[in-house]
Length: 321
Image (cartoon, rainbow, N blue to C red; front, side):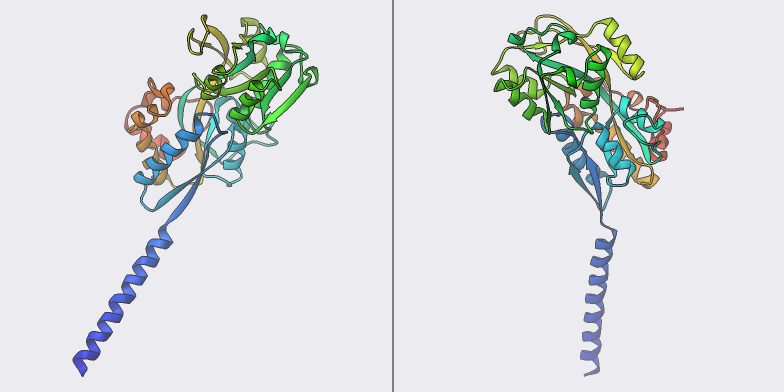
């Protein structure tokens, strides 16, 4: 009887330990939020790749991907509504400095890595006869919703050429690049703007249905844009990037990068940074613009403070002094 009682007590104890262990695992589980971008852009598939990569690198972490946009992502991380996000150098530096559209200096936004060049692309229907930015006056345009970096650049490029949204016949604020391209397909707009890699899937899709033109910028245009934001630089979309594009097209360019909350633990961000740096091939599979990116490129200083975890990794591998 005594032996049976002890055995039963031992079983209960073992069961209790199992429950405690399970409860402990649950308690240690953590969900981190990653803000991506609008549908039709490259940040959505890259976010999926990061999700798998980070969950493998950090035990007990689950990554939840959320839609977003360059400016909205910076605000989301700053306000602790998200833990990670994709950003654009021009708008994130504005946040760090407290420049519009940000109301105050961001103090919870830390740099993890530079990723690749972004191209601000102005796409017009060929029959709209738009050969330069000034020709956009009086036309219907599709831009992204407020909080998207490409929408802010759209406003800037019009301003740099003495125009504004008021000079357009209609301004459509679209939730995704695909929706904007659909407006041009149907003839409800003549122009749409976007900031992403090349070739952009939404432009390729539009080009299957309509003849299009990429609107170039001049050196004077680039200089005027740099007066608005020093982060703007001149980029080039090579000939044959899109159907019937037989010439190189100069455009406005800037850098895409990856940010995190400065509050995240150093060890956690160290592991995530290492995972990114040692698995660049996985990113190239969803974004060819990453093909030439090195760890040293990832560690380039763009004016956004590095998270201590990221800085620790880069210093270990000699990419950052």
